[in-house]
Amino acid sequence: MKVLLVGVGGVGEAIAAIAKPYKWMEKMVLADFNKKRAQSVQKKLGDKKRFPVEFVDAGDRKMIEALAKKHKVDLIMNAVDPIFNEKIFDAAFNVRVNYMDMAMTLSKPHPTDPFHQVGVKLGDYQFERAAKWEKKGLLALVGIGVEPGMVDVFARYAQDHMFDEIEEMGIRDGANLTIDGYEFAPNFSIWTTIEECLNPPVVWEKDKGWFTTEPFSEPETFDFPEGIGPTEVVNVEHEEVLLVPRWVKTKRMTFKYGLGDQFIGVLKTLHMLGLDNKEKINVKGVKVAPRDVVAACLPDPAYLGDKMHGKTCAGIWVKGTKDGKPREAYLYQVADNAECMSRLECQAVVAQTAFSAVIAMDLLAHGQWGGAGVLGPEAFEPTVFMSKMAEYGFPYGIKEM
Image (cartoon, rainbow, N blue to C red; front, side):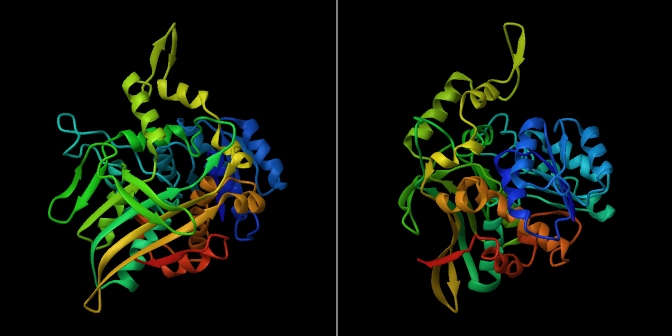
């Protein structure tokens, strides 16, 4: 398989590092706006032939198309902030290659009732074009990170193998990670974090469809496994709520994230000051997006690994019945930062986000997954994915509740 990797930040680096040992990965082009960053990752990988470096502007569709043609790739892997998704998605379609991303095209809140009604939903741009992709025989596998991604596979597995009827499903994400030397240092892209945390969260209910609530709503305490323990989680906008109900039968679907009071306070302050704005404004004759300024002021999550300690847990809680009896279970994956740094030289959050994309590439390369159209991870047979998780160093667990 030949892959054009658009974006060689923390997650992009982890994708390349995880894929490196596997011979089915014939070539992975490391393409980034910061060419020096891509070259430093190439140096760490120690394989210039299989991991060539290219400059790319992710907002330039024609440049992406030219690189895909130059390297004769089979797949374009989108590993940049989702503001660029439409350009990359359309580029793959135009050059007739398959496409993958870890976050879908962006939403727009309802213009008059944002905390009750959906506006433009996450992924609408992509799903509106699904028939064209299917007609062309091309696959766009959207939302194949960890959340969304791995947990969506778990949702399909729960339906197919663990439950006769599902009453409710909910992604529950928590961690006990600490970072030395910083009062505030997000362990993932602050651009993406602001987007998903400050937008109105989406909830799915069978009788109501998709609707929204206020940010950080419905707090609950969830007991995470493997030493992380009880953590308060709150509603956050996320792709799983838009993906899972398309392929899995559940009466309710939510996404809740353990952010912590300090993090929520910082996000609310950014919003209050207008620093979450992603549109460019004029600052003394210079056009700049306030959100980009915030990102530039914070440490790059890709370089925080040696200062991080602890574990991060991603998983899905499922409530329903099996053989006429009530059942609750949590299907999850826990990544330990020390282990990820030792094995991959990548911090836990980006490594955990990256491995699902590589497993999906493996399954596509070997014909175990396939299809055409715009499909989420729930659309595929789950056991072949889950059977590879331990091989890739990210074993899953199931906790009966």
